Length: 287
Image (cartoon, rainbow, N blue to C red):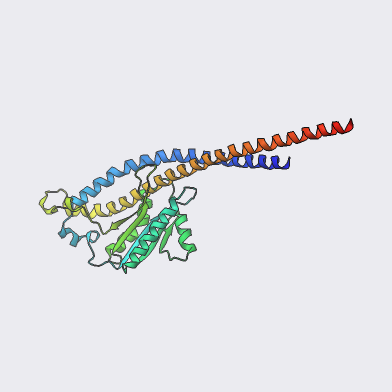
């Protein structure tokens, strides 16, 4: 009977775990819907800003506005890695960290001095454990990123780029294509490189206020919004992968429960059969 009792304890433990993972799956599903809505709401604004900056770009403006400068040689760069503060999201954090390491290694091979900036506890814990220097970090960004969160991450890096202390700024985050497709990607945020087919001579347009006035205010907002969009996509990707991971865990727990239940029934049946045999044997001995 001890074996049956042990199996029964395992059944109870697995069932409790399944209830937890099922609850986490439902919570992640609810958060994913809201996070996806934020992604779809943020993308059109970012695309519109990119189109405006592209249409106003000109070599003359590149000389006047530091955010539009294109360094002849890249010697120092910053890599901003976005991870989650929590785990239990499948390979979400591991894939982002792997992408950041690939980016850092690639820059090192090119002879570029790269400094690492991290948003999220998981990425910070990983690089701290391995003794990799971290220039700055934050763990205060929650499931609903704000434009203030984006400003806190990028404003200092943007100012350093404008001052010529940095030649490039890269962002490592998940690209939200769908709830099932959220690959980690590295995007170069600075210098700003408008698409060539959209680049035109801004001086040829009649603008009110002037193109210079627009750019002076729009460029910082454009950079800040790009980071905000990355944060929003990263948050949605985290919930998508957490939902998938918890659903797989729940399904696996169900399979384990089914196997343990069969094992328990066989053990209980064997025990009952043994007890009946002992009773029959004892009765026969009394005769």
